[in-house]
Length: 192
Length: 259
Image (cartoon, rainbow over all chains, first blue to last red; front, top):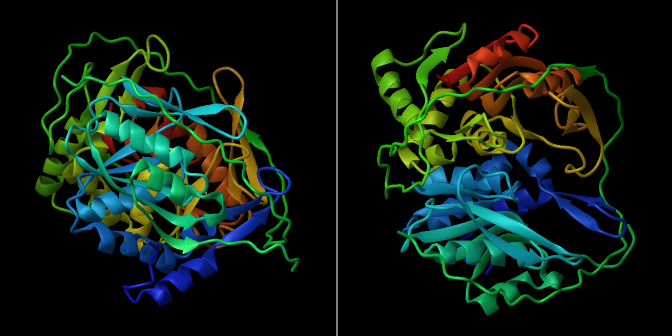
């Protein structure tokens, strides 16, 4: 589901939406990149973003917030602090020191890998996965796999933005997990 | 003892759709450089020990400790009574683990991820920074990729400042300004968005750790080039032997823990 449907936070959502910017042809020609850094420049919108997630999760007994490198690091820790959960960074290969578990996942061309510290998450923990945006859902699925391999239960994945055309929500549904987003970004092929 | 089950991912390759559209824009830029060697070579004898239990407990195969000293060094006044602050600093210090031979043999890596697993210690870390900066008119918190992204945003949120990520090259979309800096071998670069920071903004630079100060120095340069005033640099950990504190162009440094 998306925010704004039930909880009367439409004003906050609209405020957040208005801060996002689209950067065309990044990282490659033809791609419209949804940039959240302009959201971070608006203290009220940034606070509202965190508050919306905290309101949703504070009573859900979440013990772990896992954030995906690097933009998941900008949202995850603040949520973790507010709900009293641990924060666990999920990182690209070779960034985490010490022992890790790795999960490979497929990109459009080639593969990538996500790592988590061994021992950071324990069996039975209830986890939330946070990233700025969900596109195909590949990274979120890799994140969920890491947490589940460590014995955690993934309660939900949470992102600021969803790009529905890329069907990440469906991919998560196949994994058996719900997705919560604040904003859906749909593009129409018109010129402005 | 955890067993890891082998996992076969059933993946679907989805081809992302491409769209033709036009969007918002932002604008131009240039760049000088600073050279500071970045070395961190220490060899100390290590005894494996278990870090004190936090919520849920932690099990690590290597949990070595070196001599981490609590400290709160800077020129500014301590805003909290020393007794309370000492308890928090002690817990923070205890939550940091040292990993030997990472990323290379002979290096003792100060790992803050174990601090993040202790909600009380993590909150205390943020609170200590917030207490120091909340009445200093800070309008921008700049965090250095990637571990500066973990500490910077909660501080920014609490003091009502903007958060600006300082990133490795080619990560930020749109127009950026870059600052090159020297490493032990070769150079690296950090970037900031054009227009994120304005002349007259009062800035705080955040990272998890300061070693030689090269990265922080580059961050200070980026902010000053756009007309901001850098009030202070703040890190969780300092490695004083590497003298980063002396390489900040006269800017003050505040840290919680000295190693």
